[in-house]
Length: 394
Image (cartoon, rainbow, N blue to C red; front, side):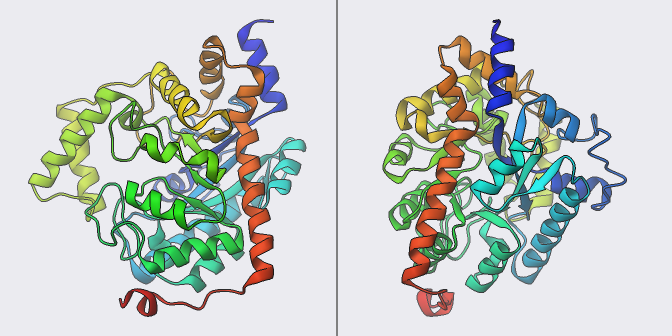
């Protein structure tokens, strides 16, 4: 059996469950959430990284669809935008009942994949989506959101981002209560985008496994969005996992250095993450004048190998961040690229058991762990009525 044949057989038995895809934001930008105009069943090559034919080709059986709101949105505006994203997700999934199925639990995820459908989960990218309200957090869970990324690119009153000035010193008392309430509900705590201080505070506060839905290793590419080794080393005790992303500026050392230099130049001109639209336009202009160095499959392999070495084979997954960025590593331009990565890892000596853990086994174990903790906590305490004003004096 050739390596490609081996990987195809493995993916048939253990499809990829990817931690983060921004197709819903692209649907907003390209088509105003009109899924007739953006028909993912017919194929959207040239417009998006993701559609149903290419998910099948890439061996993707489960996907966390990001319900994303830019980090500079706040208050009721952020909540409304999040609800619009959730609505779009439900409508997109319901439009293709023969090929997609909504999943809220690990068992529903397995059942959907067993039926040959793309098991579809929702993840909210950024704590601005809850507007510092635990009641809003609970209702996102009711609507099917199964992880919350504690911050996006902007720090919140209760949690610090990796790419902004600190506000809370990690997690505030209210931030800890957010984590506790997520544990009680069974919503995964997602630590991508957050500052290392926030990572450590969350790992101290949580009773359940956490995820990094789309992050890589800082020791391999020195970017603040990546995970330091000391935090990776805490994952075996916690039971969670780091889902390695493919974003060039996070996986390629030269691309990471390019992005940090560009960010510093933008900040010197007063352009920061506080104004998402202006920063995006500035970065596009800079890239046109100074092209970003490419990243490669080998770069992604290096992150997978490092996370495995530091955290262990039971604590690694994949979070490609397709449709969340304009470029991907060479040869990994859309969701058909997972077999290419797995072939490269197989050539490095990863066994079928290793690869099955990477594609889906570890994520399923992590979800089940969070669900077990939630069942126990729901017997011990009810919903938290705490407010940010009470806990933080905000």
